[in-house]
Image 1 (cartoon, rainbow, N blue to C red):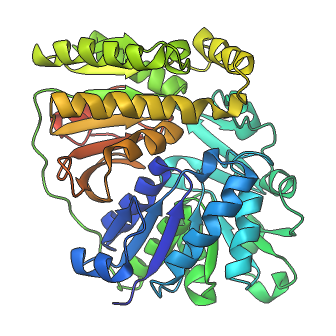
Image 2: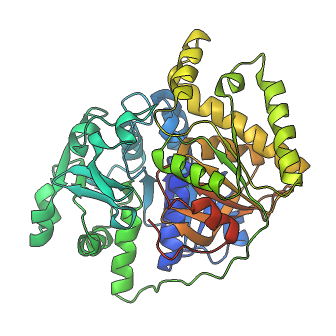
Length: 445
């Protein structure tokens, strides 16, 4: 089997983002949640033309990345695809200490030494734009430079205080970065002009730029990429334009009677989605983050939340369990301060909370099996979903760009579970209702 590409996602929502882009674009894709033998992947998913591996490196330290990523890159290399893509969030959130994209780049170059490494971060379909090296993102109809973005500039773990991706990246690595800017795209500059660079970052503003970049990527044939799903969108644009693939239509998905949502996101978009859902029949339960990270209280508190939620589910209610409503929620600072008092690093909050939220999700599904669930928050998704013992995901239907509804594969009772992994900043106000109904909104954002 010859695969077009393989990819490692630095969080689970970013991984489903790539799977969605490829599958809808005409490249059937399977997303692995554990490293199955390539021959097993081929036997179980014979139609797959691309393979992804979902990870959690966005919340890892440099030492953790050094332990995990070389194994992941070599594993993906064993599939024999043309490209291994290290997929990062389209908001590029990272720091020298946590989720370092520079560290991932350096580790990748040890496995794939060819330079320059192409880097595409802009993804117009996700309303992410790179202009003369600076990243912009749209939220609720307004476009912000990333260092002024209402969520990313105050991210609780990796706040973005620099919008120039070259400057941001060189805080994390000594590797040189050059820019293939809007003017170079208009001229179609030859890549030989950038041969002395370790990384070549591409400006991306619109679909025309994306198609041009896709052609460059296809012809350049670099074995290692670093960037967002904008790289897949670019490649697909070129392959569709040249008639090599065609866009895929998805089958209709039926509605379900109720939905369980677990949210660890502090994004204002998710806060408005929770508020909308509570106004439209969902029951919201605020999780006590301090109890979840306290070893003396966590077990009994998790059991209490499971009992309370199960009672509501048995009444036919849809339930949202959330740890915060927006970046200004006082629970965020209270949790950080408590972690410091307990001797934990504040950057570990997403991991600790995610695992506990996963325990709640697992416990509820064991006592009250549901056909469909949703997890919100990039870091939360990875740590929570791993508790379920799932092995792979395939696309069922799009809900919002980058956050589709998926079908889970597993050797346990969760095989066939329908699950949506939602990035915090993605989707309309009625996102959770769309997951419940199985209806693609008339207009997605």
